[in-house]
Structure formats: structure tokens, C-alpha cells
Length: 124
Image 1 (cartoon, one colour):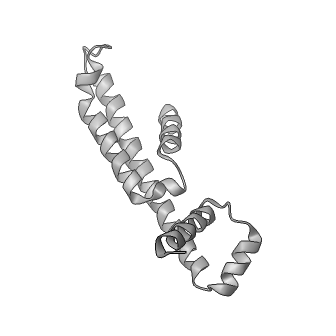
Image 2 (cartoon, one colour):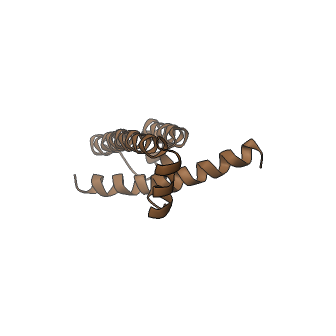
């Protein structure tokens, strides 16, 4: 086994732990064999959840601006949607790129985050 293969295996197990898919017996083994691994992973999971919350707020803010702008523009039709909301579309795509780079997709995918924000935006 070379270093890249070992790294891949550790990354898979770490992702399984972060998603909550790791069996209890494996967590007990890790606590005995590597006492610092589980606390480090728990800290990492907490940091990722904070990042996800920040991305959720930013995404919801962009959606709110889009809705506000759509209500303010007097001649807002189906053909004007692309030009009127172009900045908001760029901001959403930028957020998506930042989200994929941040590593938060291990816990929550972008499409699931977008669905949550869409449900929250409908409640407004």
C-alpha cells in the first residue's frame, strides 16, 4: 500500500464519520488506536456546520434580494428575467463554487442546501 492509497482510505473513513455513517465498533476502535482522531474529527464537523450555516444565510440573502428586485421592477416579465437578475445569478454561482471548495459537501450537498433555502424563502 502506498501513501496515496492510505490517504484515500483515511479520507473515506473520515467522510463516513462526518456523515454519521461509521459503525459504533469502528469508532470505539479508533478511540483506542488513535485517541486524537475522533476529537479532531468532531471539531472539524462543528466547523463545517458553522460554514454551512454561513453559506445558508448568504444564499438566503441573495434570494431575498432577487425577490425584492423582482417586485420593484415595474416591467418584469419572463423575457426580462435573465437580464434583471443577472447579478444575483452570478452571486449564486460564486457561492456554489466557494461551497464546493470549502469541503462542506461531505455533510450536505449543494442541491440539498439549495432546497432548504428555497423552502425557507417560500416561508417569507
